[in-house]
Image 1 (cartoon, rainbow, N blue to C red):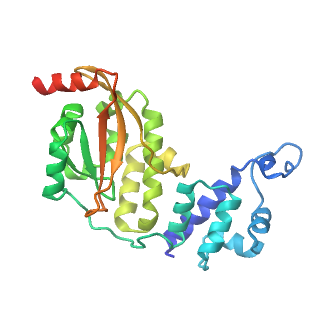
Image 2 (image 1 turned 180 degrees about the vertical axis):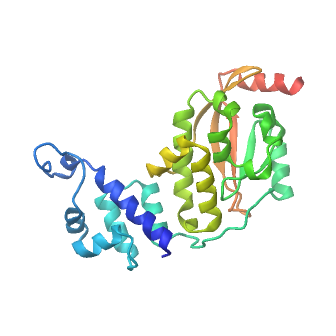
Image 3 (image 1 turned 60 degrees about the vertical axis):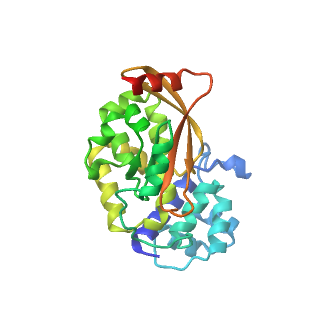
Length: 275
C-alpha cells in the first residue's frame, strides 16, 4: 500500500467513524450530549482488532491489513457497498491494483461509430473522467464540448469550471456531489498516481466548490437517475441517465441520456438538429 493510499485510508476511516450515530449501534452518548461518533477503542472492539493496530491504521502507518479485517471494519462503520469497495481499493484489494493508467484521448473508431449511431446524447468517459468521444446529439445539448481543449475536456473539470454548463443544471449542487462521489469511488486504485494527484490539485485550485466537496470524502456507486438540463435554445430537457461499459474496452464507459417518455425532450432535440 503506497503512502498516499495509507493516508487517504486513515482519513476516510476517521471521517466515517466520526459520523456514526451511537444510538443506532446501541451505545450511549459520550458525556452528556455527544451522540455522533465512535471512539477508536469501540471500533477496534467491534472489529476484533487491537486498539493500537486500529490507531496505526487511522494514522496511515505502514502496516498490513487483510481483506477480512477491512471487511470487518467496514461492517462496524456501516459502510455502503461503494464505500466498502473504496476502502478495499485503498487497502490494495482492488480488482485492478494499478497506479498509473495511460490517458485515453479518443475512443476507438468502432466505439465512436456506436456513439454516432445513437439519436440521443451520449459520450465516452475515460478512467480519469476525460471525455474521449461524443455524438452529434451531445453537441446539440452542450455545444462547448467540441471547443474546449483536451486538458479541459474532463467531465469533472467542466462541471466545476464552466459557467455555461452550471447554468444549464438546475440541480447543480446535487449533481456535482453525485459526480464527485462516483469519481472518488472509482479512483481508489489510482490514488498516489501522478496523473490523479495532478487532476485533483487542479480542480481544488480552480474550484472552491470542488475542494469543499472533495474534502467531505463522499463515496457512492453509479446509479441511473433523471437528469434535467435548461437548454438556452429550447428550454427544459429531461433525460434518463444510464451507463454502459463496453466489454472489449472496460477502461471506458458510455454515458447515455435517453429522453424521458412523456416529456417533449425528443421533439426539442429534433428541433435543434433541424436548425
